[in-house]
Image 1: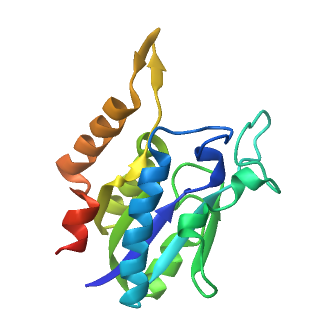
Image 2 (image 1 turned 120 degrees about the vertical axis):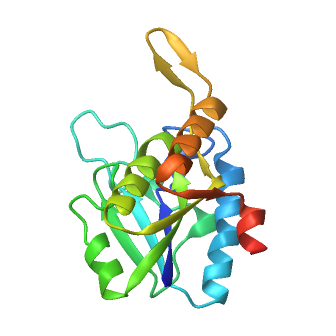
Length: 181
């Protein structure tokens, strides 16, 4: 089984003073950096996914801004694959699936942002494409959400989406669990 790391949307706009700050984004990026270091040390495939927002009315991940840049903790090295996407699902209208197949990848380790949106959409799609998925829960971040006038705290949204993914779509682990296995 060949394994790859998928780093989803760890971009400046999700951090302090960014256009869409998430709760716990710095800590999540630090954990993602630890996972990234393991993949680099083991010379395993790494895919950085970068979201650009080009739809009218977009307020974050705007092209040619500092906010759309990949955050320093997980900045790609020369030779690491970078995929640009325009939708929450990292497979939609990108070459991600073709790239993973060309590398004979069967297992994905996923870190990134936002847990409730792009991480969720990508992991569900990956499972539908028959990849075995592991999500590093504390290397992901979310934000407060609202529905019907009620606020769902970021921690609750994050945990709800991780628990839903763990029901069928992925094995959810902490950074420490992943690094010590």
